[in-house]
Length: 244
Image 1: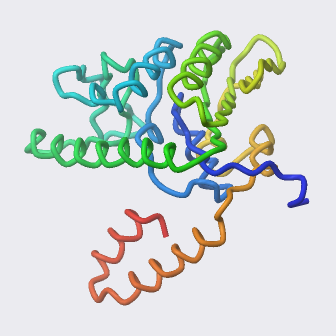
Image 2: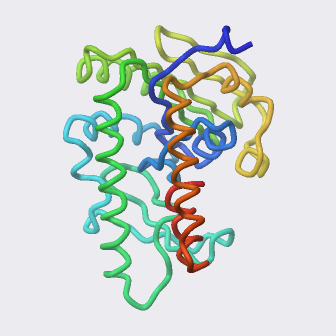
């Protein structure tokens, strides 16, 4: 089976909703935290804006002056959700309700800047790349074809592929154009897509990461080091940070 798998140097979620990042983690394909893992968008405007982001290393994303606070989400009552009016996305699970929102923003912005830098650095180090999207609404392929075309101009020496899972569509179908593949499903996105997995995500089983042995070895080393930390609270924070 492993001989039939398609190998990529980098597999990353670019958002749509959190299901993409969750399923990459569930399938053991998420090797690090990236900026769009826990975001969502409601229109293809966000996909078009990604082009500007890649061109300027996302310097205009997550700026406080572009934030619009959204009503409380009952599923995450301890979090403030902000619409990024520049990037047309929602930062869903990053900001806590706290007494000092300015301090919390500074900490989150620093974290996101690290993740943006990591994304750009990993792209530059990789040859074959797969970007994953997931949407809870029907979306047309045009924006993703445009993104693919622009990425080929920005990174002419990279082999970049895009896969999109779009739920709540009129019919089940697959659209394919060069390196863009859009899977449309009639069913609505469900809790299972965010908690375990479902058959629509089985295509990830045919994907393999190059350098996975070294990645697993690194994770094992980090896990052993964290287990040596005496404070339980600190161990928990480190496990969350390094996903071990």
